[in-house]
Length: 184
Length: 258
Image 1 (cartoon, each protein chain N blue to C red):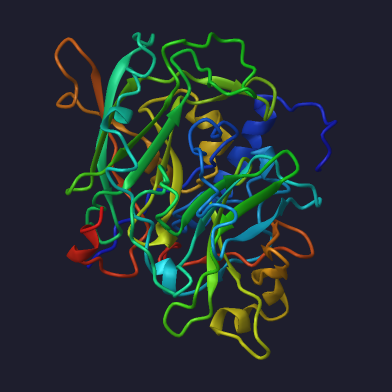
Image 2: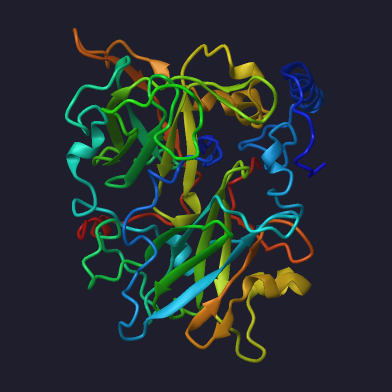
């Protein structure tokens, strides 16, 4: 089958705040709910400054490793875990989600799928925030990332996980593209 | 280069940079699908584009699925941006419609589409928009809708105006509507902008020109469609959106819980 050429992306721009964020967007579960954890961090530019006009999206399996296909992300009822969240960074570039720890889907390692949008970023960036790795645990991406694999792994904290995103710089995050995103 | 104290360049200087990149592309004409994230004429990219190649990976696990949205998430009235404030917004009323398809031409069914835009005067209802054009008390400029079983979206709005920005001296964005789209897997996630045919600002705009392959950037331009235009009511534009190819074939049963 002939593949259709994709519609290009464009920057989310500086004026998305009244359109994309919504009440409860970053709270996949309520803080204090059984199993609730925090996934938070800072988005930094090539000078190390926090990016105050970025938007992160989170997409993840539930703790059992099930990929949830339930509506309700835009109007959360407090009981339905949808696996999707969205968080605009604050003036210092910080974001914070309240969520559940994702389980492994199939044989894979458990990770949060993360998409980054920002003013000055002409097309979205995709990455993974793996849960802290057991000794020796790896997969094809982490192996390929080599010395940069650490940028893909969230750090354990008392109340959850920390995952910083570096758009540039010595700790530049490993960003991903799927087959077909570029002309073959 | 990263300093903020630099005097703003003229449009002529900026355009020379745009044309230089375009000329280099034209020597080989290698097809490109996407904007270059490293595109210096759009000054804000300087510290915000990755400097290393992206890793090509086959999507796995949760990446092979997209979030599900449904009737719980979107009120059908959110697809009419002209009725949100109790009065009629100023400007050229118009309907925008089209289909959301995956790379194999399959419709993306019952999926979320979000749009936002400036008003007819080129002003966003955003605290950081300092353009001294009037706000319209009858227009917020944001809407949501779900595609139907054929992947069709449709909304009513007013035509946005062009507006100035601070990239360089006398910088103006062509009129556009921002779109946010989901596919059937998360790697298809897309945020983009739809433009209007024949905009005189196209050649001058580094955001539009960051897609250096002309065939690709023209995919962002809607078509005026008189069959969408309605008698004594609204003009009509058509714009189809193709997401990058799905990596998993959706099944009918996935539609059950929407």
